[in-house]
Length: 286
Image 1 (tube, rainbow, N blue to C red):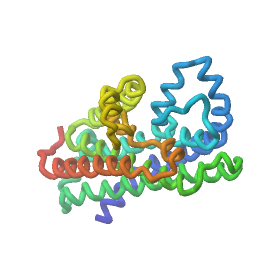
Image 2 (cartoon, one colour):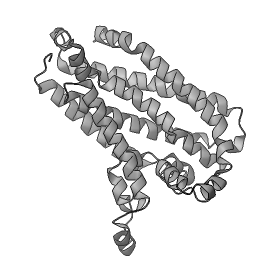
Image 3 (cartoon, one colour):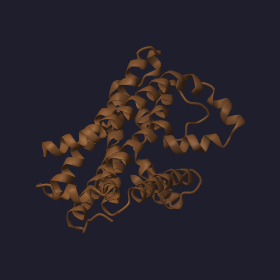
Image 4 (tube, rainbow, N blue to C red):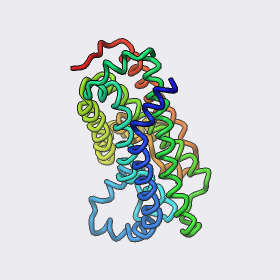
């Protein structure tokens, strides 16, 4: 197991470090610039009305006519560049085995090692989690360092920041587990990456559509149903990114138990199915 972990580290160390440093730089720049940009958001809404639904889809909440300084920090954590870097790292990492190994023609050598498929999959999972903590940790470090030079009222309480990080890690687990599942079912790495990319794109699209159409809105208001039907528009139930909403955390000050639970459930089911498929399917170089 240690030898396999060393092999994974040797193959992915520079990519993970570059993703982490890139995320740290982006988070630092956004932490410094976003409060200034968002200060004039009401003028942008009046000049470009179509911008508001896009921001609402990203934040998961209607920002109103303007964003407060602390609420603008929520946009930092859902900025497309931030999510793209994190997800690109996951797609690079979680599609390595078996899809990437089959593509490179090295799967026969990997599976001929005196180690079970389960241990191979477990080693990949441990390395993925460790690299994720490094990448997200470097990103948070970039935000933390720069936030010391911003005004105190622009920073949300540390407890809320902790809640956001837990929600982000839950999203990281869910997306990575889905990528593992796509890789376990594929013989080509580009195919696995394409499937996960399409799912994430569809999630953003569903979030955007949910701002204009909620089929259960009348039924929800008529029966006063509380919970997911009221908290999430029906269309967004099927969007994985709708369960990651830093703006709601900052606005309510509460831990997103439902959102984290749903993401953890998706991660557990996808990872378990991926492990079962990887352990049972017929794999060879093609």
